Image (cartoon, rainbow, N blue to C red; front, side):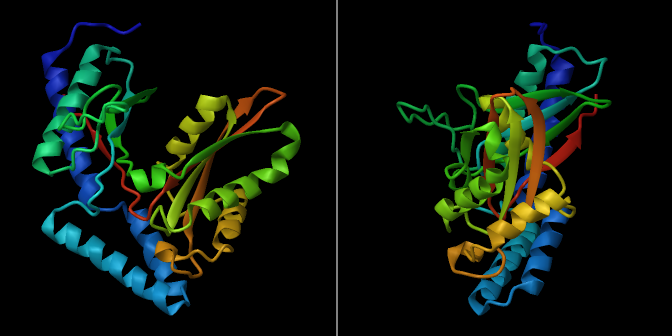
Length: 279
């Protein structure tokens, strides 16, 4: 049950941490993602693709030096809160995150991307109906993890309700998703794949998979990644050896008659950051 009384101190601390997390995520890529881009650039053999990698890496360096967003599409705010036992599940959590998003929109700055789905009216501060999207999970410490999600990659994400007999078809579904997407999500991409659960749970798992480190893939993830790279789409869709930097998978048990599979596509600017809340 959520406690409605808001703790002003907790609201302020969460707002500070949220703003800081977005600043880090928007202006500097995580070390594992940057390392994956550098490895991909080193093995790429296509001349045009190598030039695109040079452009991407220069873009990242300039953003870090100048403290500005890596991409003009600063995404919509997706936030994961890790909640320890001594912090109540209250409205303060959501108020603090919303205030942090408002501040970040002004101070970083972030492009105001959040609009009403029907009227398309812009809130101006990246908050609105259901935004920012806040997911609460149990943990040992109170932390804010942000995953700014751009539209180019989100728009080509897919979910499929496969049959239990189609386990071997998961690889085809993942590769087909990227084949349909082509250059629209600004490859090289990172693909989050959710397998199992229910219709909505598979999509949530796919997005959560984008929070996982990309410097290690298990055998199954590696097979999926190789299938995507075999498409030859390459950086920015201009052809090349590397279409996906990594594929990360999260699974959940599912109904005996179901096999939900979701693919959440993420562009090369796979932005995420975590900040502990100081109370």
